[in-house]
Length: 151
Image (cartoon, rainbow, N blue to C red; front, side):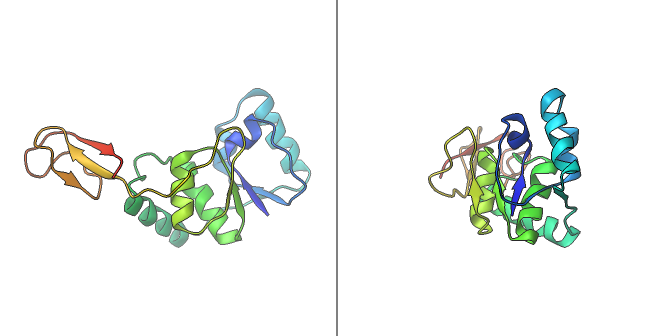
């Protein structure tokens, strides 16, 4: 089974595998991509709503990798659906791929190259230069903004 992100509908991705997605993906689509969603739903694509416990597990993994600020609400739920359904996630989103790698979710990319390795991002203070493993709004030492950086 494959769980389809909005990029699958936008790029007219086709597969013979069983398909699933979440309701929030439809809200992201317009025009032809929306029609493709509707057509696949009408032909048997599964619409899955993940369990809140699984959503929390994905959010925790995203915090651990440093991708939590990069993921949208639909992104988190797509990862959770893929995890629950033991399915391949079809996406071009790099942050989703990074969290999927942490959760051992197989990913298939569409129009982009996939990630080469999973990263656990760090966050560096723009004022004092200290680094933190978890994202915060401001540095707890000097109060300056933090910026995500590759470890």
